[in-house]
Image 1 (tube, rainbow, N blue to C red):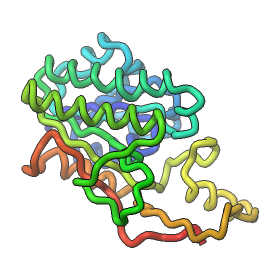
Image 2 (cartoon, rainbow, N blue to C red):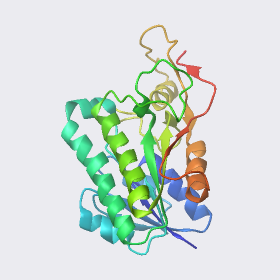
Image 3 (cartoon, one colour):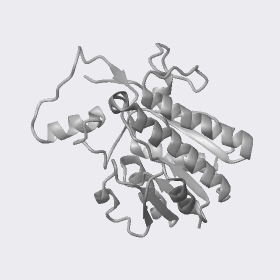
Image 4 (tube, one colour):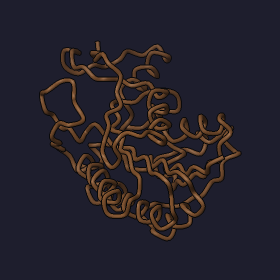
Length: 247
């Protein structure tokens, strides 16, 4: 069975991905610094090897990639508002951390890296639905840093032959999403408030629409990207039509 490295494995998407990999009998190594992930997300996933460390440290990335077949790179410092308030940390985690991981993956003979991109790369362009071939127009430091990670993936494919695939996620929701975080998605906040019998606050007229994507769709996309014969070194959108309004 292949050995899979999941960075950010204690996070929402990462822990769900690990659960699926383990259920398939695969080997998993987790790399997480627990800056935004939670140890309780790893309950029941003890068969996975846990490495506590930061992707911004190259030596840590080298150790994490040793003997690995595939990398699912989920680690990041999420949130647009956070990046506006602290762009340096956002860049360090998302851009510098990604190039560290790619370099370590290349040096250790990793077969393929699947990178968690972001739909924020598209910016506020009015065209709907978004298409993979649309020009990018990032509007926040977070979006720029995630897009830089995409471009590093492409460069490593072209320059070093490292197989990479970027998946641009659209508004993912599901189990293990942290409703207590100020950066949590609106669905986890709504669900928590409804369970508590509290009202849901909607700003504006509620007709703002999003392409809400259930976590299982994202996990399946990651597994397909690991083996797909589709062109490498490029980005693919992962969403779930049709659009749904907040109302």
